Length: 121
Image (cartoon, rainbow, N blue to C red; front, side, top):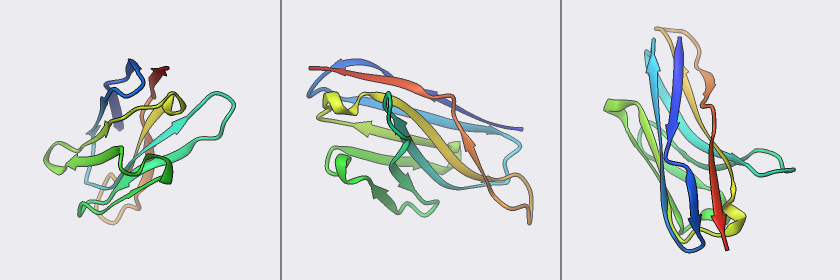
């Protein structure tokens, strides 16, 4: 069984910073891509940032230059450093990871429970 545990959400003012963390644990053979998604009230879930096992990254246009995704492969942990936060960044942020649980077992998606990020103006 695999679990993703997120931490680091909260309420901050516009212009401030927050750092989210997400650790994968359980019966893990290999962790492939790790990513952060977010879902604001009344909107669809959207990809925020993704990092490959090799460290390549990709960002949504709305967060480029403000957010930085990184990972610690030894700890199976992904981070999202969020700076210059805006009220429109308010959402529930979800961690996602593509994880193989055994040799020659296809990777599948796992999700964290979500952490609320609220930015006040």
